[in-house]
Length: 339
Image (cartoon, helix red, strand yellow):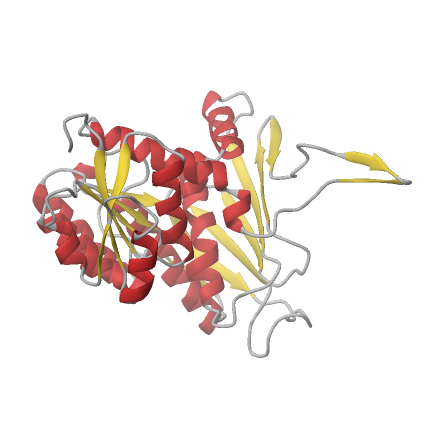
């Protein structure tokens, strides 16, 4: 770090998410600067780097990680590229914020977990940003207080206006429901032990061959049930909601009623159109928390175990989607490093 303690960050991947993180570090949060950017598209990397004073552009993550002014790594490349970048960062003993998924499958996530274990300390935070959303934080606090009693069920709804052209039926689980996988584990404090995916008749608005929507049921080791409605071509906007049903009451978030207008014989509000808009504050808080912890020499927030568990749950979900029925989740024994 510099004499003032400013964290030099290499951002790997300069697509929509990576470029937004470059902007966030450069313009929004404090205590860090973007020292380097990496992308396989050299021209795109140069264009992003040119917007930040003193930022260098690379096509090879290893070259950025060995730069003198790089103290930490933010990985925002595509999921299949995460494992190699994570293992390189761990080899250099660099702190990492890795966008979800940690890796696309449980086997590769386990390899990252084993590499971090060999270091003997946590170095990786996984970008499950909903843990930093104000509404989710409030719901977590309420559940932990015990005021509502033991959680019995958790209802989740996850809707997108339209899916990207490359989206497949399994990606509704691995790329979208991955978030509900993590918040279910986090809110309830349970591990997910089995997954069942039900397939309603696809919406007429879904592209051909896309099973959309899907209805996912989680069983947990604490005896609770959680369900997820995932609907990625709802047409009207981006919407994420959760309702906890407990022994002595319920609590719901995500209604989006921060402001309700009344005019011309109608009442209503607006609906966010994508995840960047809906969770902008959560992303800001997540990255700021990572920078602050890294400067203290700590790692907080969701870690490699959370990324591995999510990958294992999503694998079981994809199996249920493709083969039908209930699929148990197989996890290795939780190492002591992860509590």
